[in-house]
Length: 220
Image 1 (cartoon, helix red, strand yellow):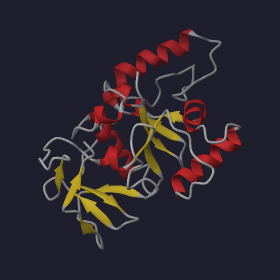
Image 2: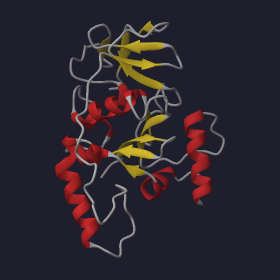
Image 3: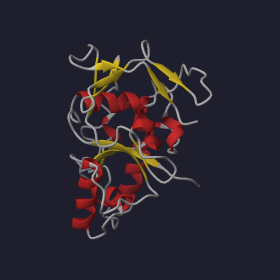
């Protein structure tokens, strides 16, 4: 089995699911550069998710009441209001909206999942937030987008693949891994990412006032 991850927006109560983009949902299975999930994520970070608190959330770790991380603290407050303090995976599954279906790249998987929802009239769980009378309205209309710079506005730093070395633990340089899932990861099978709790974004322009990161080390 293993721990499965989603990109979660704690402010808008929305998420992206790797499985919907025909990718594995374990942490390292969607880290390669330019995949459709990361392009959808970047498009959202440039639009609806801009300035929001996000993380790459695993489904096997609860949140402690004592956390002082701003994103985890918000999630803990939501789990408490939901009636299951700390059980963040249950919170997301039951109350958040899956927005993968906004993107053309997720159409095949999402259409299949929506068909199951439509066939089971007694199932009230509607992760895509669809209107049963017009279930595909507004879906599959967007393409993801890649940006040159990934920015941490809280720490005032950024990385770019043409300027930042991404290295494995043994020092070898990676030419195909995006470190963002590691930096934003929270789960049982990973250390809490260094950027969890920070506001991140993307741009095609070098962000004013931010410092370039020269090297990022992967944890394997």
